[in-house]
Image 1 (spheres, rainbow, N blue to C red):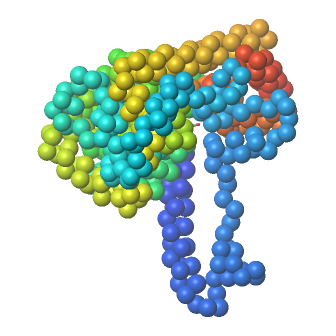
Image 2 (cartoon, rainbow, N blue to C red):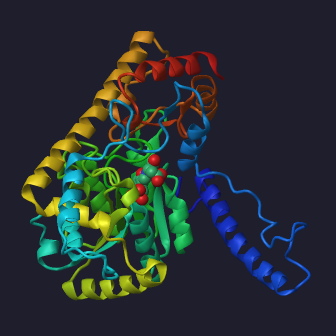
Length: 448
Ligand code: KET
């Protein structure tokens, strides 16, 4: 497929764009209506009576449905959130320690942070993703702003690009995290897709990716998952990353990395940052959105960062001045607590070390769940090749189960997952693997 030609995914994106435009047009219309004292109200007198009920979010809505289920065997493999072997959410020990340090420090106050957030947090976040010895950091060519987790970082980056970058088209992989097209479209970018996943091999469609990016218009923005691609669990090899970089730089395509899983793919923070570092090493420009939701388990603290690597220190400081104009009217300045936890851990050698151990333990538990699920399906003789369960990496397995099979597993086995067949391996435990394997076996042997 040529980029620009109309694939089903592109058509869905255009429909989303039309829908979003339609709702603002409708809003203008209603503004006019409600100015009249006799219209804009429903029978009960509500000015909002005309609203249709919106569907639940495809990922977070899975948790809503799960919470309503009263079955004792119910299992939530929807949202990408780590659970222990006991199926409980985990607060890392190192996070507890950092919080104690913060609470016991009576010199700490609750003043507003600057618009760009906590200075230490920003510096240390840049080092974490680009490497402590990164020339871009040493040359002050990187501006980093604290944002509301990964999503907020993507949104601020997208708003900045829509306002100041000459190309408004962003290419996202197909498939990708379901929120990507919405974040970018609402920020004012026009979204197109590039081939990424090959359902036949359950691996990377590298040829399709190269062809699509090769025919993208010069200057287009390209969204890349730094590691542990969501939902497929399929990443390019380092050699393939080198080729992607070469192609993108030769065409002047602008990389926008989404790094939501640093440390979760391999268990090693540096290894999982290699894709980003390959791009930064050539001296070119790029954007990176970082999240601490998964790798520090700080989901609800909403802590992340947007970094923009520029050609010169002077450009970077002007970019930062403009980022402040994007952030100030959006949420003024970011919250202090989560960023303080991260900064406390990243700047203390011992705490940093302890974090890497806990992170590796989470990554290893996920890898062991992969093996256990694969073994459980093999021992049941479940039809099909399930080796992708152990080949894919990161938090998710893209099982290949279709939406009917997923619906069957939810109805009959109380197993909750997104309708595209993605399961969060982090939500599994040795205790629940047999139940999931039974459900998959039944779904592929009995369901349509
Ligand atoms: N990028 C990717 C690729 C991603 O999977 C997520 C979250 C985010 C960004 C945003 O994370 P934040 O919490 O804003 O730092 N994904 C999981 C949760 C969600 O959908 O919000 C998920 O896919 O289950």
